[in-house]
Length: 53
Image (cartoon, helix red, strand yellow):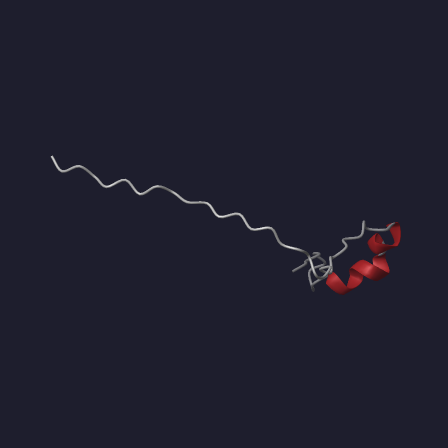
């Protein structure tokens, strides 16, 4: 039986300085006026069902 060759795993750790701040995104909580008929009417199809992408 042939002996398998062992390949030792390597791990390299580098210390880096952050040179810039990345922009984040913010997800806001829905407000009560987001559920009004005026806001929702744009998302209704001809049968009256509400859809969203």
